[in-house]
Length: 420
View (cartoon, rainbow, N blue to C red):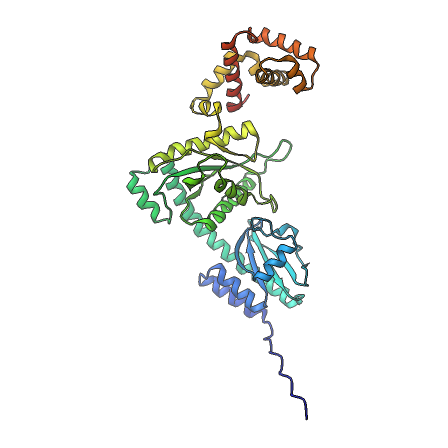
């Protein structure tokens, strides 16, 4: 008896690069969204596809669970879901199991737009690689068109949110009706977050104006993408030097998990070019009319928090303590004048003045216990005694006059807020 004839293998249509490129171009011209273009690339090349931002945040993905699992096993996905594009070779990155990952940069002549990441269960042929390079053009055109439309919409929304937070947008009813058209919800208690990129460390170039603009755009896009995955009803806008978000009230308590989770997700693992930033959180706003106050508090909190604690911090206005009262004084010149009147030359910006202020702060925190202050500053006892004598010569009887000591303590806090 003869053995049955094996079924023929299903035939695979040969790849026509020109046909694929033409089809993608037609989709772009027909205003097809990026998802449709990604679907076409995946179907034509029989691959899994992801389009990301420049730092690996997913714009559109068509990755099967098994493929995503392989990427995670290869440490190519950070805990927040960002693809670690900086670890992917432009040609081939081989995963466990033999799958191949290819990364192609998506860009216009003016700016980088992101990456096209392709995962195949085989080595791609040269013809398939050519097709991918042609496909990148369609992806770039789609993203550019989307960005142009979004730029107009985001500016309009941002301008209106700015008016709301400055208290000049009109009645509460008008504001609620207007933002409803954006898909936003400002109907309940909420808090305002202000996020600002931190200045580059000393010695690091600050970047050209164009580079700074691109950093800010990527920063704002990161907030929009992360919040879009949480709720489209959350307002977020780029104000040029800061990104402002209005969150539901559960994040109003200092140290609250919702805010910290959001900040951690936006920050990621600092890979892919993501720059460090600081965040300020205002107090609870019961209604739309209270939002301007929460915004002002968040704006002060991010500035004071960065100055007192350094960059990369999240600061709630309610945890500023005495700094909170100082931050409520609108006139920085008056605050600086108070500090100068109390501290005299110690308010200066010389190294000696800074060193004496540091010792003075330690002495205040130890109730002028010279031995303890010497231990904390790793100085000889006699060195601190000499500094106490010098401080009394400059400030007056600070060791015995409690009112003077209070003035000095407040003046030091003022310098932390307005800068020494």
